[in-house]
Image 1: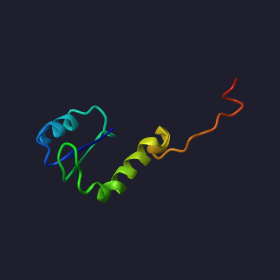
Image 2: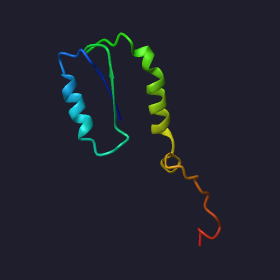
Image 3: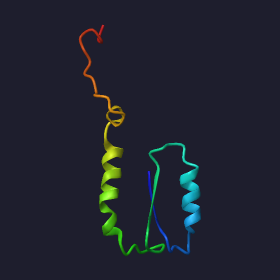
Length: 79
């Protein structure tokens, strides 16, 4: 999960996003703080690469994330 939060958000304070991230149960949860408020992120385009990298990693097969190649079942596995 990628949490994207505006640093000038007065509706939901940044500290709440930081607390949610700190309590995560999985290292794949990340927090991206960017300039902006609750509804507008003026510089979101500057963070597209970070978002794309996150999505790329999140959609990669689990075994591949750990540097292991996925193995194909052999005929012996079927027995």
